[in-house]
Length: 159
Image 1 (cartoon, rainbow, N blue to C red):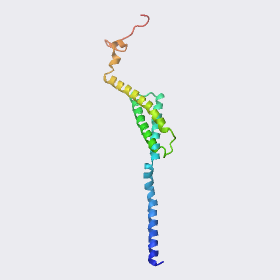
Image 2 (cartoon, rainbow, N blue to C red; image 1 turned 90 degrees about the vertical axis):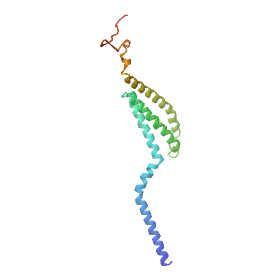
Image 3 (cartoon, rainbow, N blue to C red; image 1 turned 180 degrees about the horizontal axis):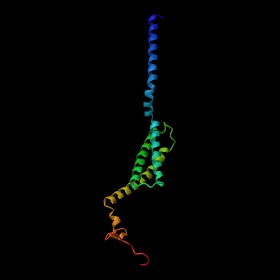
Image 4 (cartoon, one colour; image 1 turned 90 degrees about the horizontal axis):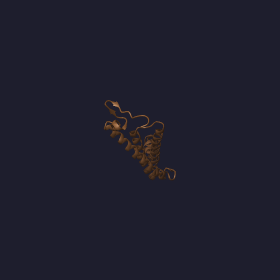
């Protein structure tokens, strides 16, 4: 082995070590980017967001929401459930999601859409009633209206 080939090898080794050192030093910056691109991380994030929205809706049992709040929650759940289904179909096998999870989410989508439709319909009706000034509440024959400045009283007792 002559001196020039030895020098060439040592330069190659030095360059390789320097490249490896730079690669290791740069891994702190590269790893978070790769973690963000990991389909399992994003699948988990979407499923956890779905769980949080469901928990918020389940809390409606204790604290009754307005129709507008319920509409917003069911709209958000419908969107995140649909995203979860797509993510599970795309990455579920790779991320070792339980078999049938996407099918369960699809079956629940029908119920979610029904809840969304009902809540948003009620919210629209409340908004419409508020825009009309609550005219339905002031109907004289309804028993809650005003006649000559006072509330109408229904007769009591036997008629």
